Amino acid sequence: MTESSKHPILVVDDEPDILLSLRALLRRDFDVHTAEDGSQALEEMHRHPVHVIMTDQRMPKMTGVELLSRARGECPDTVRIIFTGYADLKAVIDAVNKGEVYRYLTKPWDPDELRAVLQQACEHYEDLAERHRLLAELRDHLARGEALPDGVGREQWAEAGKALLARLDHVLTAPRGEK
Image (cartoon, rainbow, N blue to C red):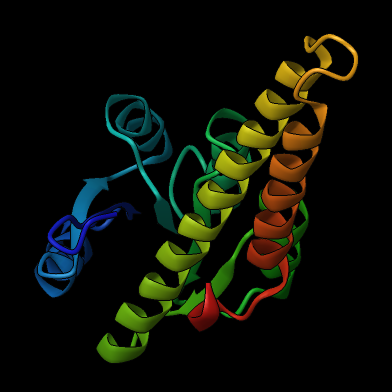
């Protein structure tokens, strides 16, 4: 991500006033997309890349947990957050087990905390994208090495492979600020 670009996020809630409020709160920091139900949200995810989806739990037709479970299957790299005004322990457990939820938030939200959580979720998305990119680069490197004739360029190929592995190891183990 460049400094000037914003992470695309999708906010899902069946209450239009909440969507308006969240769009106003988040628009300076994020590219905010909204949907009023699960079906709209899935359509929106197919129209636009989404790094983070944040959904209400209690909605008609499709709960937040159901939406996040489907989103995980269709867009597995999207970071998933659920928020609700109800303290429903079963929903929290379902969200973690079925939707692989990054965070669970409660309504009403603290604006600073919400922005911070969404920023952390975007950083998590970036980390996952970097891991995928490095793994693809490593797979490509390995495939090219298998095509080399015996002895020809193998030493340079092996050194480049070690460098790729070191970069991948660093991304997987270094604290966020050191990447």
